[in-house]
Amino acid sequence: MNDPTTRAAAAITEALRDGHDVAELIAHALCQVAADEGGIEEVLRNRSRSWEAGHVRSLMEGTVGPDGEGLEAYRKAADAEGLAVGTDRRAAEPEARPVVRESALRYAEELRSNPGEASADGHAGWECGAGASLHVEAMTPGPGRLGKLHGVVYVCPEHRAAAEERVKAGGYGPEVNPAPPSHQWDPWPCGHVTAYRAAALAALAGQQETGASR
Image 1 (tube, helix red, strand yellow):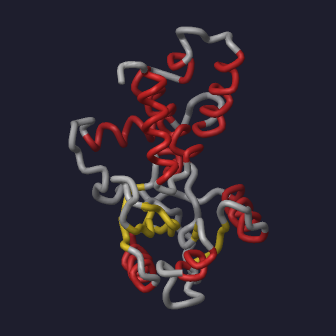
Image 2 (cartoon, rainbow, N blue to C red):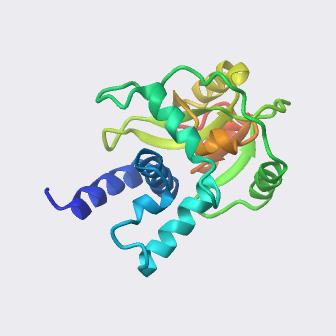
C-alpha cells in the first residue's frame, strides 16, 4: 500500500475496530506533526486555503490553542521518547504535575451528567485535585493487534495503583500510558472515567466487581 490515504485509512480502521477514540487519535497525530514541522500552518502548507485545511486548522487550534501554545507539550513528549522506532511509549510518568482548569472541571461534570450513545463518563470515587498525567486503559485481547479498549481512568501518579487495581477488579488488563501532550497541557481531573460499555463504566467507577465478561 503506497498510497498515503490508503495507509492512513488502514491505521484509522484498525484503531476504530479496537475501540480507540478515532477523533482524538487524529487530533493528536496532527498536532504531533505540527510540533515536529514548526507549527499548525506548516501542516497545511501544501494547500493552506482549501476548505479541508480550514477544518483541520480548527481541529488543531481546538486541541493546542489558537496560537499553538500547547504544541510545546508535544515537542517535550517527542524529545523524551527520542522518536526512535520501537520506543516504549508506555514511558515513565511526567515530572510536572498538570493543573486542572476550571473549564475542564465543568466539562467533565457535564459529560458525567449527560451520557452519550457511544460512550459515557463517571468518576472513580476518590478525592484528588491534581490533573491526570496518566491514562490507565481497560483492555481485553483483540480482535486487532492493538487490543480492545473498554474504558480509561485518568489519574495522577499517586492514584495510578488504585486505578490499575480497579481495572483488574473489573476483569480487564490495565495498560498505563502517559497522557497525550494536549491532555498534559489541559488535563482531565484525576479520577475521571470514560467508558465505551455500560458494564465497563460500572466497573471502573467502582459500582460493581466485574465488567469485562458482560
